[in-house]
Structure formats: C-alpha cells, structure tokens
Length: 315
Image 1 (cartoon, rainbow, N blue to C red):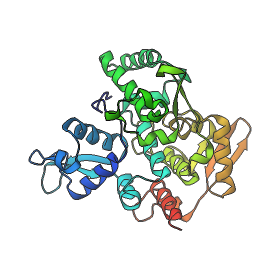
Image 2: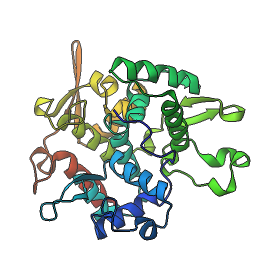
Image 3: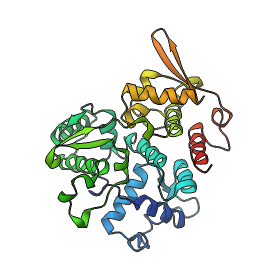
Image 4: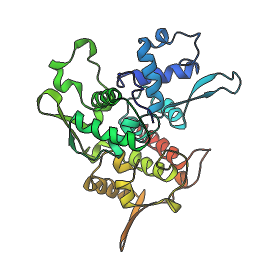
C-alpha cells in the first residue's frame, strides 16, 4: 500500500499532457539523474516527483529496466499508448473516466483513492470520518502509517474532485489551479468552510457508453488487485458484482443501482450487452462481437473497446 506519493499536489490541468509528451520524447525523463526534468516540464522539483507518481497512479505509465540500457525507464502502459495515440492532451471526457477507473482501482499505488471508492461507505463525511476509517483499514492490513499521511491524502482527494472555483474567494491566487478530475463531479462540499463533503452520483449522460462498457471488460480481465485474470467465463458478470465488487464499474464511478441500470439499459439498446434475468441471479452478458470477443492485434477486449470509443469520436 502507498500513501502520500503525490507530494501534496493533486493532478493539475495540463500536467498529464506534459508528462505524456515528455515520456514519449525521453523514457528516462523521470529516472535519468543526468537530466533536468524541471526544465523540460516547466515545473518545480517536488511537482516533478508528484507528476511521476500520478502518471503511474492513473495507469498511464510503468517503470522497468530498459532492455538495452538496463537502466530504469518510464514507458506507456497499453492504456497509455492508446491515450497517447488518440488524446495525448487529455481533453476528452472519456479519457478522464478511463483514468478515474484506473486510479480508483489502484490499491497498490493510490491506496487512499482505492479505499475512498471501494471501502469507504459514508455518503456524507468529514475529514475525521475518512481518516478514522482509513486508519482502521491500514492497521487491518498490517500497516502502521502516520496520521499525517492520511490527512494529506484526504486533502488531496478533495482537491482532486471538488471544484476549486466553487469557493474561489478562499483560494490563494498563486495556487488556483483546477484538477481535471473535478469535471467528473464525483465529490462536492456541503455548506461553508468545506468541512463537510459528500459523494455525488454522476448523471448517466456524463459517462460515455463505450467507456462504461470498457470498464465491464476490465472487470472481466483483471482481478480485484488489478492483476490479469479472466474471472467471468463467457463475459458474463453478475449484476450484483457490477454494483458491489471492489474495483467494479459501479464502485469506481460511484453509481447507485438506478443510474447503473439506466446505463446498462442504454448499452442493451445499442446491442453491446444483454441483461439476463433469472430466478435469484441477474447477469449481464457482454455480447460476442468480432472486435471484442477475441484479442485483435494483440489487444484485449478492454483495449479494443477503448479504441472503438476514440474511433467513434472521429466520425
């Protein structure tokens, strides 16, 4: 588990685009000690550390030894490659939802985000509520993390999802940089002073259907810890799992059952899936489709579905 890897900085607009371009130009941008990434990226030293962390936390990059150089290098994940090809400036709503899916399911590198969406069940909460429950979670998993790290992560979660312009009068002009994830509308502040917060259910029209479908394929292809493992034979997922399983589409997108069923109904109308109602167990069956059923060009059904989303945008 990992806490406070963000150096107190939430993701800022244009950061991911800068990181994507820099990694494409030089895989050693974050790891080669002979380079000056601050000059290349135009941000401070601590911000460089933060950006390196965020690129991994949202599933864009990974770090491993280069085959030729034998030095640690940064490279794109399969998702990162697709986003670089189709939306390297991170401008599309679907791209943000894809990154949200990866971030909220990243128990290893973004433990507090994973906990917030998958384990923390309060709809309305204070910082103390969150920190208290996260402390229990950490100790229950053998951790001994300092409370200051939990405090820092909570503030970063708030700055990631709550629009800073809502309370513009309280913001230092030098620090008035909005997070792109605020556009998702998943968390809001209640009342004055930002002391009480609530999770918000996004309207179904905010989530592109093909992106939600991709999240269902991701459920099929990755286990709860994010590892590769086909858990559902024939791409059939119990409806209860979509709503309640850790790292499920329902959890990472913060959906209630009504909104979830509305999205599934739309996908069923588009002939992408079928909701099969049986006695005691309702199942969502992802329909066989030549682009998704088998690995095409070395890509998984999840990746092919994302490619389909970007292809539709260009029409």
